[in-house]
Image (cartoon, rainbow, N blue to C red; front, side):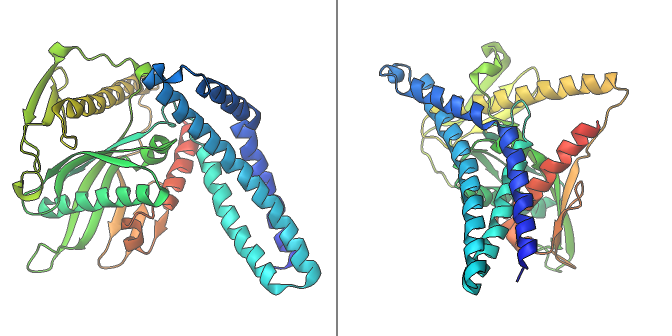
Length: 370
């Protein structure tokens, strides 16, 4: 067990860290935002404009959740100090062990909230639109792309974040050529944006009858969901809209009407599609949102390229960002942060928070250094 002096020192350090987090989050400002949104939400004519109403109630829910999260942590920290003092005074080893366990969990929760405060980018607080594409590696790469999609969907499920699959293009033998889905939660774009890049898998191929080792690649693209304030204007003359019948694995029809939509942006050649909704109009609306997100990202990249040129070259984080090795040893390692774990199965089941937190901290340091 941890001695009393160590426990008290850990508790003091944790209290100092939480105080810093509270200062960055500006609790007084957050309370003022909640009060203002509550006042807007209480207006009797709020739902005369459903779009505005939904935005207000969503923002209110998010802000209340943030405020509740930090105030709950402060309360848990205060209660933990009292619990430990009582356990020490009464010589209660069971309560003391419980306090030590609570301290470990509280440390993890405060560290996670601290990482949230590092998300201060222009679009970090938005929902995320994720696209995964198989790259080099043939059928293994298609299978790997599907494994990655499952990993992110399992991560979202673990956190209770709703995920909506917009489109999946299945490969002929196994796996997927590409998939696009949206994850809805506060700051989920800022969190998942560090996953962008090429992910490499090394394993014994289940598709090779000689059981040879295979290296395959898949690319992950993460975009912020576009909002009306972004003003991404797409003239009708700049797009071609094709409709087709939705299909699942093996070409099995999942819809007997031509409701799936493919939109081609003629000036850039960007192609997006959506087939998860029942109606053609809904699929077109969803596909347009994805196209807007891609065009917004393209503009950001062009602006960044101009800045880099002005800086005489700028800096690059590189494209290949993580390696997943299943054979001849077991390891997942981030090539930027050097964060690694020795149990790939848990990572592929959605346990990627350690990689996300390390990536966010690394990005913050890299940005500050630049």
